[in-house]
Image (tube, rainbow, N blue to C red; front, top):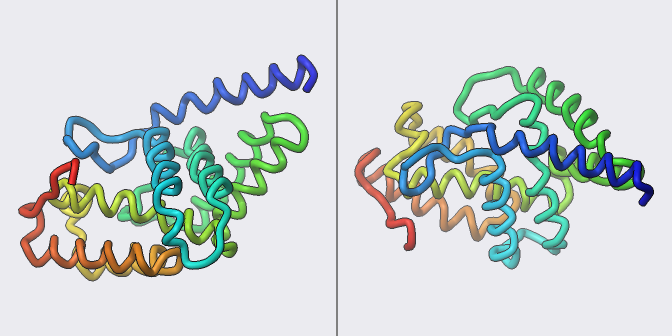
Length: 203
């Protein structure tokens, strides 16, 4: 890479530092504050590192980790859209696509093109890698909510049926095994009463 390319790469790395300021609805497990999108992406990468054996089909764990590290970079421009917030999916997708072109366009040459292609693959969720990455993107906040006595579900008045509809198909498509485990936790949580059952952070 030329000195010019290095400068572009460093500029991109400085730009995505802003992801640390994008606050999500999900709390930390100790409930001291809300998590940010950079923390969320790191945590998902760890999920992929540890749980890739449960993917629905053959996957490349390294590619899944790469997808999860970049999947929310567009939020630098458009912010986070919570799963339980009613919004126009089409308009949000258009804004995110424009953000992806701008942000990954900061990275020079083939490297930038590869990142953009990987982000688009994640969004389409057609490959096994992307299906599993999408599944983990639902698993992590689901477990946070169960572990914090309801979390964003309680805040938004989300019902059992809505949880099953909003999380189930995406998780099951990428990992039936993980969905079976998650569904059991969700049903147990709601059966015990929203906001009452908690799981210790180290369990």
